[in-house]
Length: 411
Image: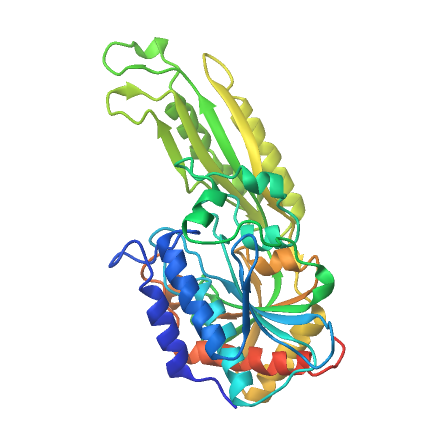
């Protein structure tokens, strides 16, 4: 039994239509009307493939095929279905679609597992609407408290719980997942980089995921008229922010060992062409495969920001997310490699420079990730694309691995 490439392509294509920016990439923010449309499509496919469908109090979607062992932990396959603004059709979505394909193959092969199979579609991995990222997986595992979630707002001040209710989700459903109910988590993802394509290798078996932290920085100055306030009398929040952000590339290079620092969000207030900005809020994303470098970079960034506390400028920094580098499960990596050899698919070992839900779950259960090539290494843009034949290869690897993990053998 092998993956149906045409079916995979169709799911990717149809899900790409659920976007707030038609013709300009996929914009599918959590708890939006586009989320609802994609959510209904995913749930319908889960039902079609014989799964029992449920959602938790964060809106994560689960499709479960019961096993023959009573109350046994599940082998979970999936990823996230939210996107960045004007992103691509494959990031996260491909992993959900491959989960659906694994379920379809279980159904078509008439396989009754000993351990349950669960397909999962997670919310807000990107953090595009509510910040921090990995919200669905972090919430499931108790790393986001219910109290924090109840007060979580987007940039427009809309509470997450209100947005959930607006699309008909039940905020009172159980939010926490008992780790004892999880035997393993398997995730396919596009690489989002150039290594696999440049080396003509269709599969990457992920060894480890980079550590990362996300900060939200606020710089408060004083507003004034752009024409009448002398330069010597200004407390310009945007100038201070620009000086800080401009220093990040050298800071990262000096830290070395692949450390990267990125500012991807910048909000200027009051955002008037003839008004000196009195407040700037911006993001800082810091990543490295070595936790020591992440911590060093955080300390240096905070020192740099604090150095601007003078001449009417006041700064503050909030850490929204901190996750240390995570190694994927050794036994699952071995199964992936053995399965890939058996299928005759070339592969290499690879590390992930991007964060994924698997890094959250890895503290609670055995996790494994498979990468497929990204054309030109592009991601988080409308040009993002991966070959359906590579997606089918990944589906076959995850299907065979899921068969093995659900048949009753210990990891």
